[in-house]
Length: 201
Image 1 (cartoon, rainbow, N blue to C red):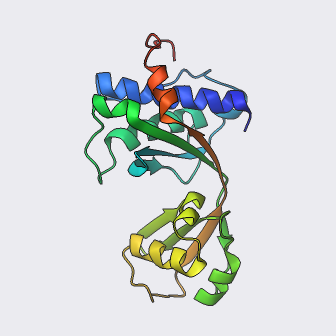
Image 2: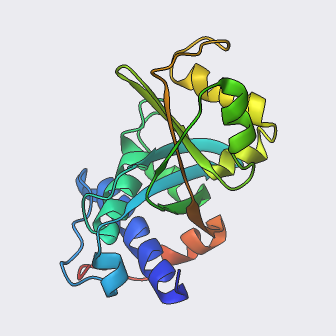
């Protein structure tokens, strides 16, 4: 992704969280915000960490709205709507690491068996989606840093979907995607609070 596009996404994500702290709703970017690439429908995840610990992670798997809008709404949701955490407090804002992952379109994996699936996924590269009945779960490629072995990666994904470790069904569906991950250190977030609040986004 072009560096100017990445910077625009960060500005929008940060502004949306700040807007949430002040008004309780996400920022709505202008229809002409950013480049043509950012105005094109895209799927993204926004991950927040504090002192290295997960603080929120919300995203979308299908492109249904302009990427810049998707990032704004996912940043707000990661900060305030992740059910695993209390809503972000103002005092926590400057302590956060903020990571944006821009997803490629997901592609089905033909997996007649679990062994075939494990041999097919690419550690460190593939994000993986599991679908079965009404259940759906995903791991971003960044999760390979904690679970580098494909078998462990798959078992943890099953657990996330509420399935037993040894569960397998011909109705299981798996899809893979890539993620362009953008990171910014918390120091930059703290510095961003020193500039006047943006009102033109």
